[in-house]
Image (cartoon, rainbow, N blue to C red; front, side):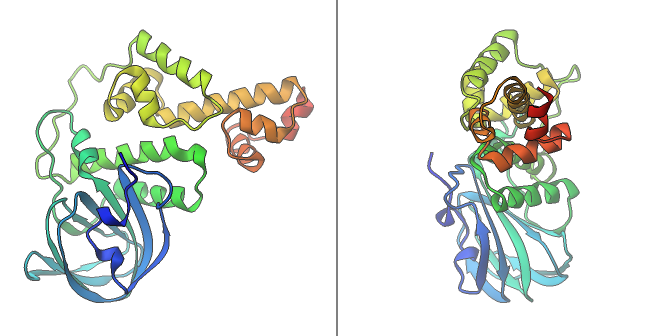
Amino acid sequence: MSEMGLGDTHGILARPGVRPVRTSAGLGWERLYVSTQRELPYRDAFQGAGSNLVILHLDGPVTVRRGRRGLTAAQQVPPGGLFLHPAATELDVELGGYLNTVHVYLSDAALQAAADDDRPVRLREEFGSTDPLLEQLVLALDGVVRRWEPSGSAYADQLTLMTAAQLARRHSVRQRAEEPAGGLVGLSDLQFAAVRELIDSRLSEPLSLEDLASAAGLGVSQFARRFKARTGRPPHRYLVQLRVERAARLLRAGSMPIAQVAAACGFSHQEHLTRVIRSHLNTTPAALRREG
């Protein structure tokens, strides 16, 4: 798969009235493209794209009209309001005022993979609706772009899965099937052992959800659910915890420079290691070293 970019969007971001602040371009994300920008008022028509569109309004309220082959509805969209548009569907839209937004373009393959059965999932056409969880996921994706570090790739993958799952569960034309009454089965002992072997051998390297899922012989969506059922934590949090534990052991046991400890444990740089250790252990690398 290739990285998603402007060519996978509906064309709104290519308009001259869009003022980009930051995007996920160049980060290697294959299933999702994120862009944060200032938009000037406009009226335009766009062809369908292979991605599903989620727009989060960061301010407002602003009047939006939308339709297909003509504008047929208007609504005041407040801050935190959403604009959802499905893949392969043309769009006519009119933005009535200046607006700051975050756009998330999710590949349709990622949305379909979020389904628990073989029924196709189609995103509903919505605008003005709110969804606190989806809003936080979009803001978290924007935060990953703003503070990008290569070691954050697994976290970005997890957010992508959670976004796809929330869209499929709460904003699709056909609802997903519920989990079995007995609960979701976790990874088997063999699967978990294979994943741990991969993590232990590559803890200093960026590890994506695809890497971990492949070790277990599962798709990424199914793997993420089964991994959490087995460990009680999402893969990203589990991976970060292992990196913190290894870094703490190295800092207490020897004299390896802190920057080298960071690199050996999969952190981008010494400041990244310091920030994570302070968050997880309420201390610093230097203090751990002094503890011996």
